[in-house]
Image (cartoon, rainbow, N blue to C red; front, side, top):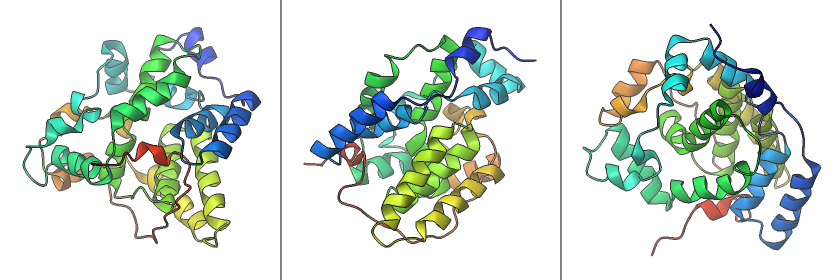
Length: 251
């Protein structure tokens, strides 16, 4: 049974915003790494397009529960330091190590993204679901094995497109691949496509209650939810990668 309202469907329509895309281009001219340009590009490409994932979740018993109870993500998703002392090899510790090694600050990413998303009219259900897939991005990096290099990002975003159905993810994956191709790495198109196919094979991670898994061995978690690791791919790093400001320099 669907739990969605007319407001939810209206809130999650796919539509371009040329104004946002122009603003993103202007920011990128000033600073190619600025994370705000990546957020504006996402929503400029129609990042509110969450009807597909809203339907999938509302037609599943666990999804209905998550929506009804507004089941929050574990606090450590935005504050990975909470997992610093978890046993080595657990999902929580792997997530902390991932963020610590790269200097990632998930709370910074969330706050910067909210500067755009919170100005948009969204229903309560839509905003809850958007926050859920937005804040799980780096957790999904850890679980799938895709890196944060440009090729890895193209793959995980392609994977996310298959999972969420938000066409902005598909366009961002294509944009990433095009940027790599402009530097001679045409193979990233295949990497992004492989990521998409992997996402179609994967279980729907939006339905997982992560709280009960963070202290479990990561291999056990993957096996329990039926998630396979990414296929091997060639990494590719760009100094002027969009959104690279999310990689905060560690002192």
